[in-house]
Image (cartoon, rainbow over all chains, first blue to last red; front, side):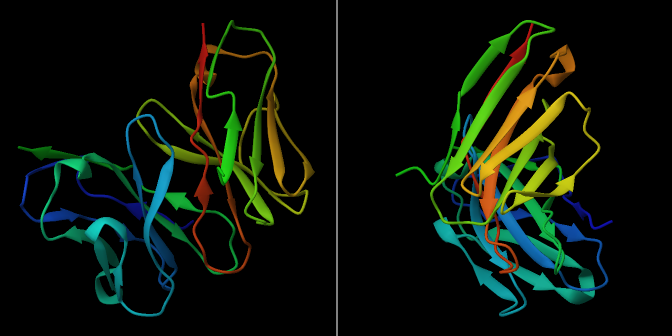
Length: 113
Length: 113
């Protein structure tokens, strides 16, 4: 079964520093990949998605992710962290022809003033 | 103009009771989902309906029964509630076969006491 692994359940960065959240997927065939953000007591909001077009995907709020087939990775980055970025981030995968979106275990991002 | 709306937002009930959570989407999507998020923030799919047809039915106790009266609505009924059912339940929708992510509702926090 398709799965994603998020390394680091908690990541802390200083305000203005680079944000890097890691995600690796298990499929040998590149699937659809997504990053979602969940702010406290809210639902999940789509940050960006990879659907086999450009390997560098830009999303909302200054986030981007790069699909690397050789590493089966889809890491999320942001050049400069802002206090408002503090949230839970989920990587998710969806195979072609499969309705199910499978989520990673999430990474809680804390921003240090 | 909420895209995916769930009611109620909070639900506190006693063990053994029966309760329902309602979900509606106005995005014109043809597929709807129920996800459960546990206390550790892990998200797991429960059910999915496409045009009122059940297409995903994960290993969920029979006490949980989804109902889709039309493609814009997907309700979740839970019988004989147990303490372990306490979680946040998210409804989501998507358009099938377009490689898109889901649009999530804001969640229903169910607490069984």
